[in-house]
Image 1 (tube, rainbow, N blue to C red):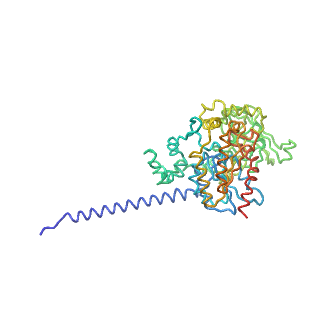
Image 2 (image 1 turned 45 degrees about the vertical axis):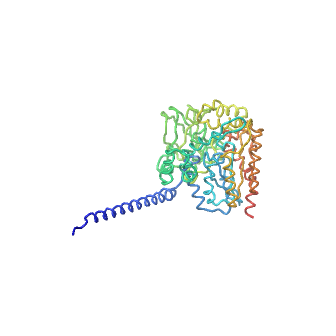
Image 3 (image 1 turned 120 degrees about the vertical axis):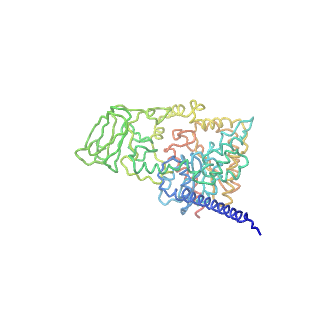
Length: 522
């Protein structure tokens, strides 16, 4: 009797296939688990020292996780695009004695109504007692609206394709986007979004090194490379990139042995005056004066004990450029508009300790903004035209503002009809209504120069009326602050307030939503 020798081979082969299958499944599960633990959990335990308006996607995800992990007694969440970020100052609002609520941001640059629609669940999990959506005409994605007779036509196919390639879609909500549009996008976009849906490392690689590099720069380097100046602010003001004016008077709270300054031009003479206190500064009685001519341009180290060889006590140093002043355009602070002289550049934490953790949603006052409010009105309008309007259609950095400006002109000749991006706001409203979360929309202030293009249009009247009626059906409110700021010098551009403008607007904003905050506490 013969035996069938093939049976053991088939059995063994089947066993090997099962082993390979099980090992493969185990490796995939392990990879997914490791990816989630390392890149979604452990990664965000790293200290966040990134600064205002830097690494927006990392900061937004970090802020979202922080909000979901904490709970205030009463929390008002301010959401919206960069318009929201530039309109109010939560740090200032939260400094009040016995505040009624804690204000915080849930915001990133270029946040559209569609973005907020996909974030609504995350926002719900962030424990809000009140959600305030700071909204603006510019948020409505006018680059996808085409004038067609007396109506606007929404270019859905272009919008859908470009939405698949936007950073928020790829980084924050790829799964939700695919769930809605997987069968309407091209194969290339589909494969990319599937990969990003599966692995956080693929989503976060665009910003993965940002907090790590900033931490290294802050703690292990000279402070010569940075995004925004975080040292002591001179009395005369300072540019955001650390450039002083001709004179910089600085109260040195931390006198390190060595500081760094940047000299733009060789053979520049700099005068250092040391003052013991404010009284000696007011009386102009320096304890020591030292001038130095720097023969080379670039970063140089300043050693205080060599400048003040007699070791006389001091708390305030005044630095004056006596020659060779560069201009803001020369050092790439500005490209258009009124130019002006600058002095030297200070290192990142000049005369101050580097305590900068969790500053990603804090904003400071810099000369970039302050100079506008100090200009005569006619001078500002001329400067604004050169900086924001002249040849805007051909300047890449102003392309979107140009599109919005043209849309404001076009709405004067069209009828209002809801479209996809506008309807997202109504869907968001319905979501908060269903979840019993108070929701208020505040139309943010607009620059009067630009607002005049569509102020009296029937389209705007119908837009406001329709939005207000839809909100009121759900017991929600629309507050129109478009015209509450009449001084154009409080605006950096058509929709973004300067720091001084935001400080002016803060109490107006707070007062307008105060009743909603109080009603939720009763």
